Image (cartoon, rainbow, N blue to C red):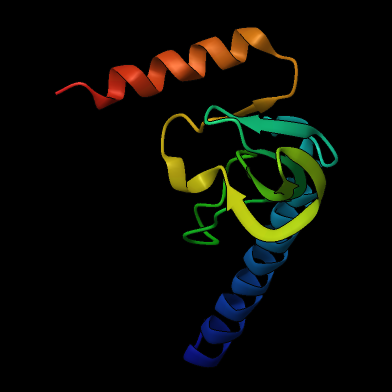
Length: 127
């Protein structure tokens, strides 16, 4: 093979790899919701008592080449309160990704998750 033929072959391989990476990204994005801690529309509570609703799923992709996980995070829109009564969704957005290992949100009514998450936060605050 001469240099031109080798360059064409390399271009062909790179195109095939790009197509596969694009297919994998689309596949992961389409199915990430199955691996999310919360589903879109879930009513949530924070261990400090504020409430919100899961409004979006998203995945972090540091590199397309190593984008190999269904793991995703949830965006949470918080509710406004007026004298303790939940009124409407506010402009305040929180997400599960910036808490690290354990986020403080849980589904409303899930007392077991509330207990575990509260215990984790207390343990992590100890010196």
